[in-house]
Structure formats: structure tokens, C-alpha cells
Figure 1 (cartoon, rainbow, N blue to C red):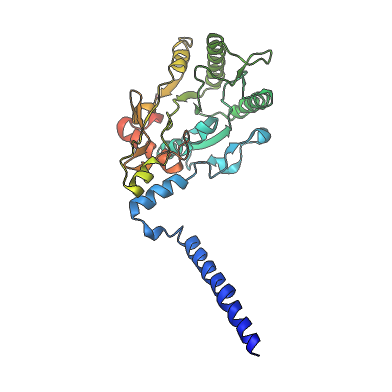
Figure 2 (cartoon, helix red, strand yellow; figure 1 turned 90 degrees about the vertical axis):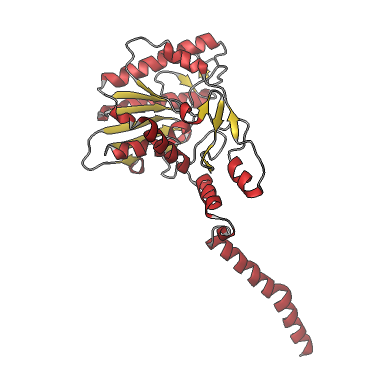
Length: 311
């Protein structure tokens, strides 16, 4: 009997009670979002921004899903619908989706997103890290051509536009390009062809400049600065993509498109902020978080107005 009591006491104190305490601790942490009450509202807002995902609707497709049609969750209809907007591009287009939806919603425009990871909407161009990728990307862009027959009023081209030394461009003979002059010619021809194809269907083309990213600065710099009270330098040094700017400058004079510049919202020359009022804009070194994308939309609108007013 005494041994049984000792055994019960041992099990209770050494196993059951610690297990119950640890379980309760974990559950409290789970339901309080990691004991968020430990921090002030500003820290919690920073943390919430970092965790916000612009791809929460799962509109950014993967290569193996390239044949998937435009899904219902990637459509934002408006009632009454005044105009139809379509977003095309890669993950750098996808992270601008909250930014662009904000603008479209204000105008009561419908908004569709059809994006594919690492695939720019440049028709008839072999673009990808290898043959598998550029083959699927090219097939996806053939599907985009069919989608465009739905008669959109605005088609937005966005993405991680090629820079000098790009490793994602292949020739028609399927060889990786290394000559920057030849690559610029291929990209320029593909972009010109894409713009002409879209405008021939009656849509206005809006080309959105890529954002600078965080360079060598960690994307969570501002929250680390606030948590540890350290004088971190949260300004990124990121050069402009002059190579792609030159491609745009060399497009045929009759190319009908409007360019939306976003770099000026964050950068002065090569020095770029990665937060607004301490709230992190990015969720990694190159992609905006959902909160940051919406904050940029509000900042753009305050400075320049809604770009859908372009005649």
C-alpha cells in the first residue's frame, strides 16, 4: 500500500503535473498569439505585418499547376462593374495584388489575378531557370492569351523584371543567353509583342515597376530595432535596374502603355526604406507582406492619386 502511494505520488509530481503545466502553458501561448500581451501595440502591429501574406487567396500558381484556369478566389467582382482589371506576372506581381486591389476597389472595378511563380507575362519568350520552367511558363502565357479574350479594360504587367546578368532567358534554340545586348533585344521584342497583343484587344496596358527589396538588410530590421533598442541601420542600399529602363526606352515609339513607378515611394537615389513608420513592408528580402502592399497603395494615392484615372 505504501509503495502504491509512493508510486502514485511520483507519477503525479514527476509526470502528470509537469505535463499539465506544460500543456496549459502551450495552449495559453497558442490562444494569445505567442503571449502577444507582453509587447506594446506597435510591436504587435509590426509582427502582424510580417506575418501577413499577400498570397492568402492562393492565386500565385506553381509550375506544375500552370494549366489551372483562373479560379474563383482570384476574382474580385464589383457591383455594378465599371471596368475589368487583370493582373499578370510572377510572385512580384502577386505581392502587389493588395496594392492594386485597393486602387481597383476604390474605382469599383473588378480585379482578376492570374500569376505564376517565376514566370513573367512576356509572350513567346523562353523565360525560366531551366528548360522545364521556361517550357511551362511559355505554355502558361499561351493560356493568358486565351484569357485576354474576356475583354479586360486594364491589363497590368508586373514582376521581377530582368536585370543585367539575368540567368532566366533562353534563346529559341533553348540555349541559356549570356550576352546582355542579345538578351535585351529578346526581352524588348517580347515586351513589345505582348503590349501590341493586349492593346489590339482593346485593353489599356499598365506596366508596374518592380520594388527594390531589402538588399543586404534583414527584412525584419525595424522590429528587431524596437525589441532590442539597438540603433540598427534599416535603410537598404539597392541600385536601380537601369538595364530594364533602357529596354523600355528602346521600345517602338508607338508602344501604348503606362508605367507606374513605385521605387520613388521608398528610395532616394540608391537608399531605400524598408518600413513605413516602423511597420515592416516586406515578408522576405524581395516580397512585400500584405500589410506593406496596402500601405504602399495608400501612400501612392496620397502622392499621385489613383492611376486608374489614366485616360
